[in-house]
Image (cartoon, rainbow, N blue to C red):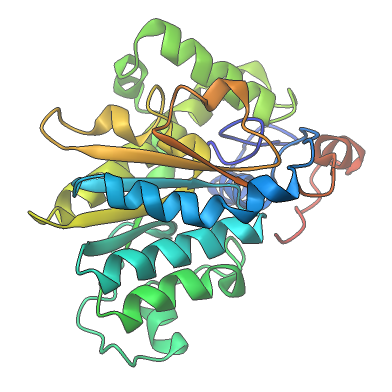
Length: 299
């Protein structure tokens, strides 16, 4: 997923000639975090961020789903997600935790609250190469310990090739939104993606959002809230998972931003959660310097 501070997708180096190459491309999407330079967040603003977030949770009624958008390499965002899991669970408000980081069809249903990490990882068929477990351990295990099921929401790897060729996905978004999605994919890939590969990658993005939406609908429980943790591009109201949800499904969107909120998403969320800025890191420069065909670095 859109999944970086500057766009929902990230950089590729060369055309996708095989499913293996496609998979590496999506590992790269999960691993990198874009090329934006973020401004520092004043310490005072961050100090009250958690308290402000809890107050917001109190004000909201019990929506069918709460969609949390993160920047994957910002550890403060995973801590925020884990805190939200615990806050909702202790109040009996959490129905399930759905993850972009695990494939649809995987789940911890049936595991005891004291299940170990190895059991949980096996149940979710956790892909360490794409999503380092230690980065998400706290989020996942907080739900398991609370007796809340954790379910994968991402498009299964086996379905990616079909999604690339599924032209029916092209009509899901209105033309203007589809153009925004195409531009986000192109920019997120540092404009290194060949033009003929752009629309197939947009289709995968759309298919991933649709898959996560289906997981939310499946976990829907009256009176409680399903929590989705995903890259922030996936939860945008104009482009992402919300566009696949029916009108009678009430959702709230909260997006975490490291440093400052990007103008592009200020109107696409119900809440912006600010965390300290990360050190500037130009991933696009790294990709341009990498020899064609080189495997991406692990996240």
